[in-house]
Image 1 (tube, rainbow, N blue to C red):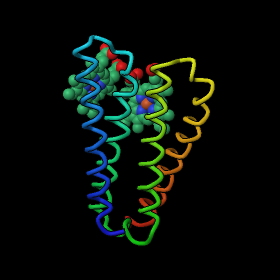
Image 2: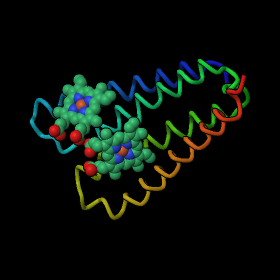
Image 3: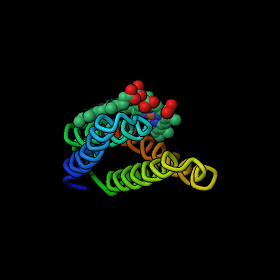
Length: 127
Ligand code: HEM
Ligand code: HEM
C-alpha cells in the first residue's frame, strides 16, 4: 500500500503525544504508577512505528501488495487495544484476571505483526 510509511509515522506521533502527556501528568502528580504504560506508548508506539515507517520509505518494495497494510492494521489495533487494557489494569488491579488474558492475546498479535514485518524485510530488501 502506497504511503504506508507516512501512516506509520503519523500514527506513531499520535502515540507519542498521548505517551508524553501521560509522562507530564506523572511528573506533575509525582505518581509514577503508569510508567510501564508511558514507556510502551512511547517505545512500542512511537519509536517502533517510526522505525517501521522509515524502513517502508527506504525499501519501497516492502509496501507492494496488501501485506504492509495488514501489518499496519494488526500492529496499530493490537498495540492500541493492549495499552488501553493496560491502563484499566493499572487503574484497578482487580480487573486483571478478567482483562489480562485479552491483553495477552492482543500482544501475541503484536508479535505476529512484527513477524510479518520481518518476512517483508527479509524477502523484499535484497537489491
Ligand atoms: C514530555 C516528555 C516526557 C515526560 C514528561 C516523561 C516523564 C517520565 C516519568 C515521570 C517517568 C517515570 C519515572 C519513574 O518511574 O521513575 C518516565 C519513565 C520512562 N520514560 Fe518518559 N517522559 C517523557 C518522554 C519520554 C519519551 C519520548 C520516551 C521514549 C521515547 C520515554 C521513555 C520512558 C521510559 C522507557 C520510562 C521507564 C523508565 C523505567 O521504568 O525505569 N519518555 N518518563
Ligand atoms: C509485545 C511487545 C512487548 C511486551 C509484551 C512487553 C512487555 C513488557 C513487560 C511485561 C515489562 C515489565 C513491566 C514492569 O516491570 O512494570 C516491560 C518493560 C519494558 N519494556 Fe517492554 N514489552 C514489549 C515491547 C517492548 C519494546 C518494543 C520496547 C522498546 C523498544 C520495550 C521496552 C521496555 C522497557 C524500556 C521496559 C522497562 C520500563 C518500565 O518498566 O517501565 N518493550 N515490557
